Length: 481
Image (tube, rainbow, N blue to C red):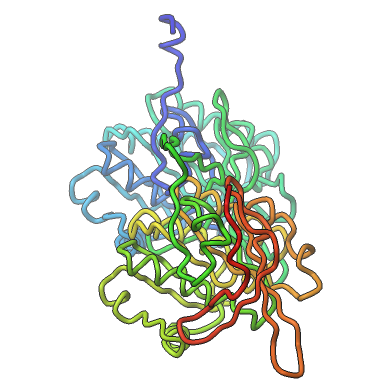
C-alpha cells in the first residue's frame, strides 16, 4: 500500500452488534455517516444505544442525542440488556442529551426552516464533550414538522456536511413507512447523503413476524448482500450473517468416528458416525426418530462429551421420562452437566431467535454434539423461505464451530424425498426409518440412504424398539471396504 492509499484507507469501528461486523466486513466506517432505517418496532433505538455503549466502553467519547426518549429510559434499557450504560455515563465516555420535540401539531411552520440553530447546537455539544462519535436518534423526529422538498434536502445536507467537516463518526436513525422496500426515510433522500445505509425490518411472514437486517449501501467497502436473520435477545440486537466460514481443516490420517449408541447401527455406517458431520434421521411419526436421537445424545454424554439437545415436540419432563422407560437414564448426565436439554414449542419462538440462540450455546456451552428434534416442528409454523433460512443459518453455525449434529425430520411414508428436498444436499448422512402395518404388529426397517466419505450398507435392515432403545436385527455380513 503506497502513502496515498494508506492515507485514504477506510478505518472501521466494531459496531458492537453481535454478528453485524461480519456483514460489514469489519465494522462501521470511522469519521463517516451511517444511517439505520426501519419502521416502528424494528430496533433502531436499540441498535443506536447498543453501538453507543460499545464505543464508549472501547475508549470513544460518545454524545447520544435523543429526540424521542428520556435519558433515564435509555439508561434503564442499557442496564437491562447488559450494555453498562450507567457506568459509561459515570466515566464520562457517554453523554445522553434529550432534545425531545414537541408533540405533533403543536408546531406551526411559517416561512423557511433554518437548520443553523440545530447545527450550532450539535456542534457545541460535540465540542463541549470532545466527542469522537455523535449518535442522532432520530433524524425523522427532527424534521417531522417540515414538509419534504428541495429546501429540506438542502438543510439536511448542510447539517451533515457541517458535522462531517470534523473528525466525527456519526450514526443517524430514521423512520420508514414500511410501504416499500426502498423506502429509507420520510424525506425520501436520506440514503443519498449517508455513507452506509442499514435497513432493519420486522415483517409478517405467513403467521409470524421475522426480523431481518440488510446492508443496503456501503461506500468504499465490500459487504455481504441480502437480508439476514436478526433477533432482539437479552443482550441486545443480534445478527446471524449466514456466511459462516469453517475453521481451518485439521490434518487427519483418517476420518474420526464416534459410536451412534444404537446396537448394530455402527456396523451399517462403516464404524460409526463421522465427526463434524450432520446426520438427518428421517421417518414418519412413530418410527423411532426421537429414540435414536436420545441414544445419540446419551452415548456422547456418557463418554464425556458435552451434548446439547433441542426438543420441539415434548416437554423436558416427558422427554426424559420416555427415555427412562426404555432404560435410557438421562438424569445423571443432566446433573453432571454433560447433557443440556432445552424443550420449547416452536410457536413460542422464531427461527431467527433459534439460530442466534444456537450460536450462543455453541460459544458458551461448547457442546461437541447437537440434537434438534424435530426440525419439522419448525417447518410447520413458518414460511418456506423462513424455514430454509433457518436451516442454512443452523448449518452455517455448526460448520463454523466444527460440531456434529443429528436432526430428526418427520415425513409421510410416501413423501420421503419431497419434504424440504434441499435438506438432502445439506446433510452428510441420511438415515431413513420406515414401518409397515401388519396384523401382528409393525415391521420396522432402516436404511442408510447417504453417508459422505464412508462406505456403508445400502440394504434396508429390520430393527426393533425395546429395552435399551433401538436394536438392529439385520444381516451382519456387511464389511466396509
